[in-house]
Image (cartoon, rainbow, N blue to C red):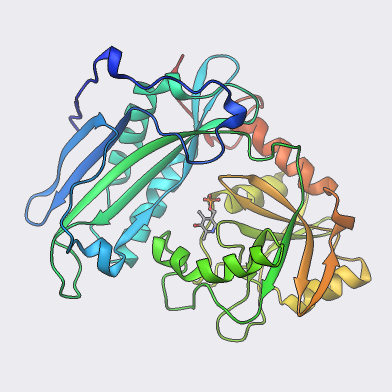
Length: 359
Ligand SMILES: *Cc1c(COP(=O)(O)O)cnc(C)c1O
């Protein structure tokens, strides 16, 4: 790939944020973005890094009407020794490739993905925050932009990457979240696109999310679409349950997003001597486990929070505390070990951490 770089004059660059604790998530964007177009008959053309700016497209662009969109999320970390690190970027590239096929889009080549992220993050390295727990969030996105109102895949696409420096996810320390078990609305059904990282799944989840928030819960825990019986995921996180020394997560049924943090937690937990299981887990089993004390902890996994302890579940009007609304030992151990790997503080026997540059 021969990336054309359109430099922004030094005096036109944005001022850097002052306090990384005030960044929040996805509110501040860096100076540059990566773009590459796909045109039917020509393939992927014009790789470019230029100014972060709005995207020109017609009002009949396919993405605006039929949601032909997929995205990814990963982070660039500043290691204390000056290395710039990514965590398993090839996994994001491969998942985006798979998502594209499910939404009838031309897949973006895996090597291009890693090359583009590497080039953009290196150019923008001044934006990678260094305070503990902070990182530069990377958002690759692919949209259908051809102007055509007929219901068909677009014949023109735009792949782009934007960057946003983000605060530590848990500002007041590692805090348990409350989940509302949704037994009416569903996020995705088997046979649908629940296992693709597409905006359409998020559109489908907004109403239930807003209702849960109104009732005072942090997030929705989704059940399967067919029976409203089996636990699926949290919507931007996969879900785990700990039964003593056993770490259990729902198997990838087809409607669950295959999280890279999920996959990493499974491999890490196994290496730490836990028994790991991927299998269907019913909400009744979860509630029974909480009641009889065999279910000792629960947590969500995803790139944004890495590990998010679950403090309570609300199901059919009853509230159930998980590990007494405290952070469990297994949850904390996995969280610390994963973060130590991602920030380059721990030896990486898995080969997950990729150095892409230096400060
Ligand atoms: C991105 C995402 C996750 C978490 O995946 P990671 O690769 O661990 O960040 C979980 N569920 C949904 C619906 C997602 O979009």
